[in-house]
Every structure is written in C-alpha cells, then in structure tokens.
Amino acid sequence: MIEYKALSWWYWFVTAIFLTLGISGWEEAFLWVIGVTVIQLIHFAIREAEWNAFPVQVRFFYLLLLLMAIPEPLQLIFWIPMIGTWAQLIFGYCTMARLVSLFPWNRQEPLTGNLIGRTFFSAPVRGNILQGLPPGIES
Image (cartoon, rainbow, N blue to C red; front, side):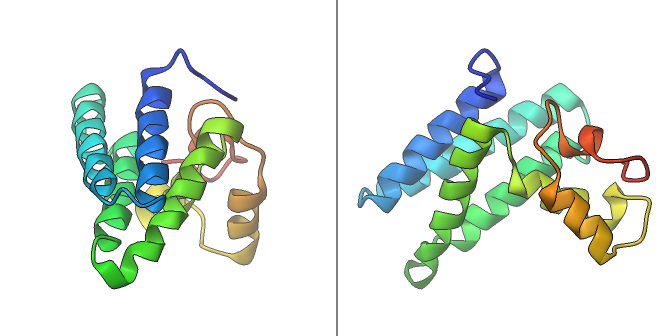
C-alpha cells in the first residue's frame, strides 16, 4: 500500500518523519508537523472544494489531535498520530479515517458494535474507508 506517487502519501510521510523527530527529542518538529498538517488541510479543502469532504474532515480531526498534544503534560498523545501515520504509510490502514467515518454525518446506519467492528477490522482499501465498507456506510 505504499503509494509514493500520490501527493497525499508524501504529505503523510513528511508528517510521520516530523512526528518521529519530535518524539525523539526535537520538540520544534511538533510545530513543523502542525504546519504541514495545516498546509495539507488547506490543500485538500481547495482540491475538494468543500470543507465537509471526507478527506478534509480526516485532516481537520488529525490537526485537532495534534493541537491537543501541544501542552507538555499531554505530549505523550503525539505517539498516537505517529504510530497511526506510519501504519497509514506502510499498510494503508488509517485509524483516523475509520473513526471519522463513524461520525453521524458520515454514516447512514445506526452506530452499533457490529458497525464499529466492521469499520475498524476491515482490510485497508485504496481511496477512503467509505469506499471499502459494506453498503449502508456512505456519506
């Protein structure tokens, strides 16, 4: 699932590198991560022409997670997007996209244990998670 020809993959790759550097001790890297994420968010908002488009939502909530982790006592939270971003890059599994797909405005079926299980345990797919889930989970 390494899609090095896609610009989005490179955005995530740079993000993962900066997160790794930040966790390794270069705290300024966390600011670079946020900057790259803001640029990515703006780029996808312009490309999709809608702020509520699924790729924009994923980047928005990813940015919120990063912002939550800024205060010193919460910086352990940076491990979550670092691990998740490397998983996205290597395996194509995006936990944030799966989580965002469960928000009420992105689904048409009730939130159940079965839906949560299918969402988090289905195999990675090209495109976004909404395209790879069984019918009934569409935006």
